[in-house]
Length: 288
Ligand SMILES: NC(=O)c1ccc[n+]([C@@H]2O[C@H](COP(=O)([O-])OP(=O)(O)OC[C@H]3O[C@@H](n4cnc5c(N)ncnc54)[C@H](OP(=O)(O)O)[C@@H]3O)[C@@H](O)[C@H]2O)c1
Image (cartoon, rainbow, N blue to C red):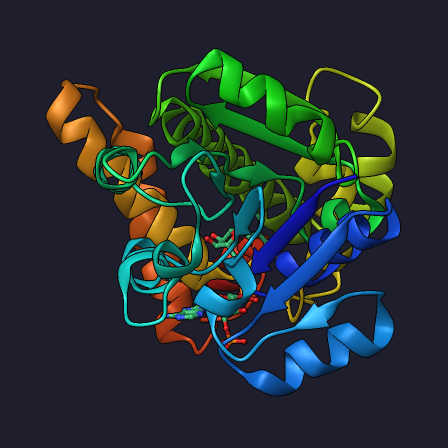
């Protein structure tokens, strides 16, 4: 069992840190909003700390799951950030969805302090985190990833090294590009069903057994048909992720026409007040 720190107890981090504690690791947590850290340490066996540096002190592994590139830089390199507390030969595992650039930048900086870095974005949503069945896409050195992989079994069903630092984030971009097109297709299908006077739920009960089936269809068609979007993976996060993917595509020469279009559709849903609505709310834009 290891001594670990977990920084960022949001929708994803809170249950992930909980699984590490339940697996028997000695867990120290930090969260910017202290009340969440206090609540976590009451629910799970573990210590809350007042700063990220304090949480990271003396830990072999430090896990981070915050919002975006800037948040990550702040909790790692900022005043009383984890880099101040981490010792040489320890490992930082970042579960935030960020650009590949920031992963490489932090890896370089931490390497000069003999700290190893793994970019490890996750897929599976809140339910995946709560149920401990996330998918983790990792970038980093093989020997480092071999050390962190056993710890991740606490909250992941699948974890895989994709290449050097940055490769985990690039893989997550592929994941988000694939989701964007699938959700828009499902939204248009359900919109068409409504316009045609069909019972959308009955339609999906049939077509889900054929070639149109997808995770989005299985997990989202009922709430979409009922117009319920106040849960799940927030559009603000999805637009952050698509923005990162579109930036990377400009650099590597990919053509992401559909992704760019769906990103604009998400902008329409934000304008309807849907910043925190689930990504399946693309249907709300068509049904309005
Ligand atoms: N939610 C999902 O379904 C899902 C799925 C896959 C991947 N992700 C990715 O996982 C990451 C976290 O998502 P989430 O849904 O857990 O987000 P969230 O609920 O908004 O939590 C974000 C966490 O980061 C902390 N934080 C943000 N900015 C910070 C800063 N500058 N300094 C210190 N702490 C900061 C927040 O602290 P406070 O409590 O003080 O706000 C909170 O603990 C994101 O990159 C997201 O894209 C999310």
